Image 1 (cartoon, rainbow, N blue to C red):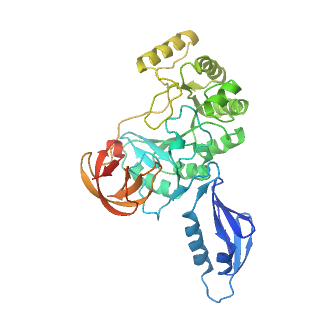
Image 2 (cartoon, one colour; image 1 turned 90 degrees about the horizontal axis):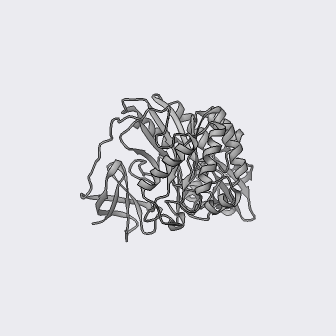
Image 3 (cartoon, rainbow, N blue to C red; image 1 turned 90 degrees about the vertical axis):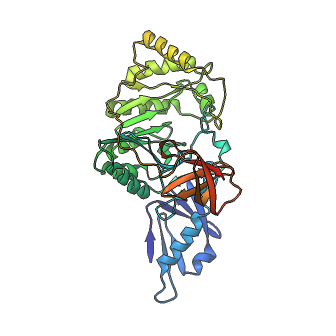
Length: 396
């Protein structure tokens, strides 16, 4: 029997098979476990198994090995263990700010397919060094749950694909976009990315699939400064070339983070670049977060807006009100099954991204339980957050 896969690739090692999932995740299957099913042959995207037993369910047995393998999924970019959330995982996609779907009561819905990033920005609000594991979500599961949410909305919806990592490295991004585009009432699909792996060819594929708006976080046009801010090699010239292509074929917003004393001059150069290629600007202010990085002391929003006004006058550009073709409206809100302060019983499902935190489930919502001493079973928790159907709790 030949088993072929879209999201899996196979690489033969000495005593085991390396299974690569969505390009950047992997696990191993021992040759001995495969040989118990039958003789096998590995190709790039398929495996052929010949069983010595009649009527043996080869596919079922191999899928069992895959299931066990996914329990030991790792990321090749950072070596972290990875939680794969799929439709049979028992983990809802509503309730978390780290993965899945976020609805803030408007016609804009956030889709978060993964948490992995390919750089380590010095100002990152997430700080991946404090998060010992990553999360990746099945594309079909995202589409299935998104479809349910879109149906309750009164207006046409705008889909924003972003994450705590970088959206562009999601292996099933193009199939995901294609399937979202087919959902009735979807008006636009936007992604936010650092642009590192996006080429004009890749950008065209994304546009053809359904992406209408790109937000690219380009923080400096100077190579040394860009590398410093990214805490990694950042291909400035390549990203600029891609930006020029996107600006001609879709909607492009450059969204640099203003890090005072580090990239003041750089922001002005990016403004000129945006004007040159016909892109819009959405400058972000560096803000301090409890679990984020702090390379400098943040400035107040009042001072930040003054800087924007100064740049607006100097360069004759709109920086304080984003002139967008997207219409954002208040829309039907999902009901909250429980409220902040309430004590509820939840079932612990899997470790979350932060140390000593767990993903728990109750009433078709995911709940992030922090400071949990248990890692399985049912426990009572007290909710300390319920805003936008994003739930955080502590053991009661």
